[in-house]
Image 1 (cartoon, one colour):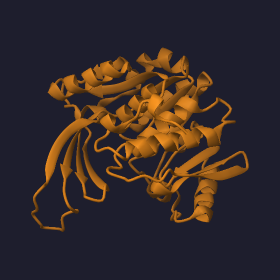
Image 2 (tube, one colour):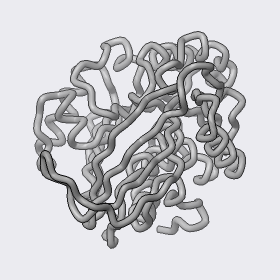
Image 3 (cartoon, one colour):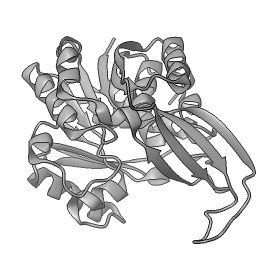
Length: 302
């Protein structure tokens, strides 16, 4: 069984269903409102544990009802939460998701306790990182924490996966050089490299730019079209599964959690792992919400 550690965010998602995005200054009615567990880090951790991996989570929450709601969710899934700690001042993270009738979303984030994770918190979890097969992080928590976690991982030959989301234009060189695999979507790839990703040649160009920035292995996800990989002078494209999309929330997080659960340490099965992750994501997008839509491994068949 793979051992995975995820460093990342916890958010309570408040989903607002609307026909379309409002225009500037426009007031419009919602058709529904619901609440679900979310946060990129939490989604990725839930995906990994539901994929069958032994998964530990490094994160922070507030001292509020939202924290209790999220902890109950993690316990139900069997996620190791020994390193999910409480901040005395900041509230648990929140995400406000505008979801239109076409299944596309726009998201507003309140970072809260997610932004209080420190290098000391990471050091307290160093034994869990050192014992892992893979460490995943994203950009909804402080960069200094990510760098510290990746340093510990590389000192112990642990595979590191960076999901550069939300998009940043300036990623520290130190973090990139500690990254074994970077997994941006097309928007994030453009923000990092300045190359607009529209087709396979532009994906290859963006991947080449990321290689020159210090990352050996690149996977670029392009939503319903699929995903592109570039590594060791080898590249390829994995088509997505065609389904009726209801909500794209957590699709990318599902992909990353499932990918990590399947990857060999030498990445020799990269295409097979990507296909399995893509199948899991195709199930996620057929249900509204984040963590509730992430499938269990028994439901993912190729």
